[in-house]
Amino acid sequence: MSVVAANVESVAEGARILQNGGLVAFPTETVYGLGGDATDGKAVARIFAAKGRPSFNPLIVHVAERGWVAKLADTDARFEKLSAAFWPGPLTLVLRRSKNCPASELVSAGLDTIALRMPDHKVAQDLLRAVGRPLAAPSANASGTVSPTLAKHVDSSLGAKVDLVIDGGACRVGLESTVLDLSEEVATILRPGAITAEQIAAVIGPVKISHEDPAAPKSPGQLASHYAPALPLRLNTTQATVGEALLGFGPGAATLNLSQTGDLVEAAANLFAMLRTLDDASKFKAIAVAPIPSTGIGIAINDRLARAAAPRG
Ligand code: TXA
Ligand code: MG
Image (cartoon, rainbow, N blue to C red; front, side, top):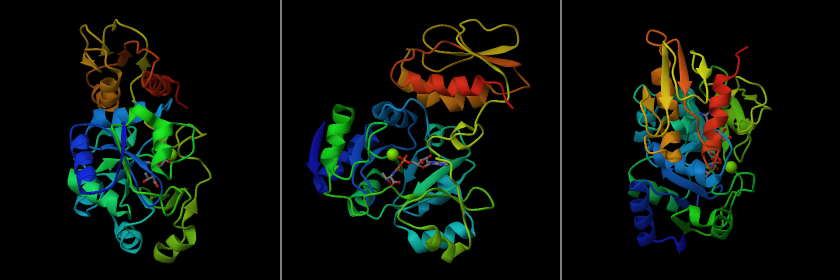
């Protein structure tokens, strides 16, 4: 990986890498983000692989232009007021995904919602405009380590897992954005940040504050753990029984195959969309799933499959 100073050339280079499915770390006003094309499932899967997270949590999708918001999500009056007041800036708004949302399902970790943010940083905005697509970007650090506010932090945490790091100096805010859920009737702060509950309440009225960490939900059914197919799942099998769909991995016959070539990044990119397709009670009575190796991003795939297969309450 190389660390390059932010300028017209490095932003153009970063945009080319992103358009080809690569990963580029870039500065925002909060922390450095590890960016990938949000519409490219494999690029999003590479983000999870690079961070080394043992599970999938939904990622924030960054936009520089409002035109993208309507393509990605359903908005309401609260969104209009809050985005007018705080965008660009450190406020992430969780909305329902639009009907034909072009963002990969992995970015939402299979949920029906999508988190959007317009960063207030010239380099981030220039990069987004040059790419011409929304960028998924979690903080650019390995899982379990602190968020990077300098380019050298990204370098020491992720090293060769990033194709390019654009150095824009120190991040002004130094703390991740506030995450506000607008997908339900009651607006709820899922993660506190630079924009406070008081500031938000001044624009849309009182908000609820969740004490659940959205990245590590304690109660099943919360956020990231919410999506599970309605059909029962049977794991670690290469043989479907009568009435079962087979979700394959690697060479061999299957109803759908996560990756014919046994590529875990490709499998992660396909996981949620394929589970949804097979979750059809008019065609199948259960979903059998082939064994997935528990290495790299395979750990997160198996985590999600185990949750989906667990008995429901
Ligand atoms: O300041 C920031 O927000 C930085 C910079 C790079 O923009 N990004 C960042 O992204 O912190 P990330 O992916 O590390 O944090 C995403 C947070 C997590 O707490 C996640 O659970 C929540 O946002 N989130 C994302 N999508 C969500 C969704 N659809 N529903 C609920 N929570 C969501
Ligand atoms: Mg983070």
